[in-house]
Length: 185
Image 1: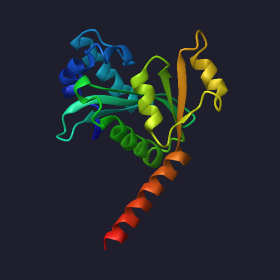
Image 2: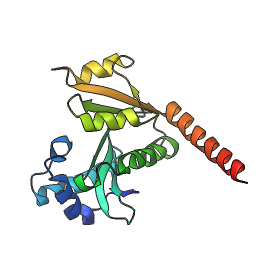
Image 3: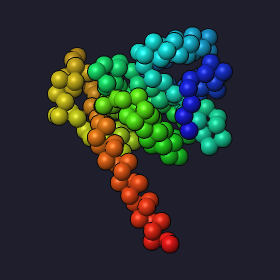
Image 4: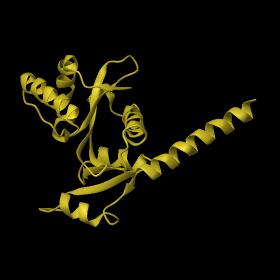
């Protein structure tokens, strides 16, 4: 589902990113394949320096279909940036990738909060965030961050996934699985 970024995936990812329904919402925009390769190399180097965390999202057969990243890491928190190629929209990959990424961030890398800065006009991303049972709208609960991301105009909503909420969600999922196995036996 997720793997470390690799320059060898650049051609496929660049083609997927260029779709007009994807490109406007990508944080690291590249206007040429060469620029995309350069940005991918920079991303890999930035992760080695601990400045960000980036993974390639893969489909069921290991083919690259998008990326998921944690940017602006500060005090065990950061901002999520994710995109999927258009052919993979609406197939459940987004939620699976986020859940896997949050598991790594919270339980392996020691993060405490992940923020999602979503344009109010980006209906697809907003609905995806609202579907996550462990994400909360944080416009009012994190007023300092909300005002910082909207310092010029109020164009973004702020969502937060905390380690506590994600842990609670994970434990609930495990308990439900155990109960289901018990009932089948």
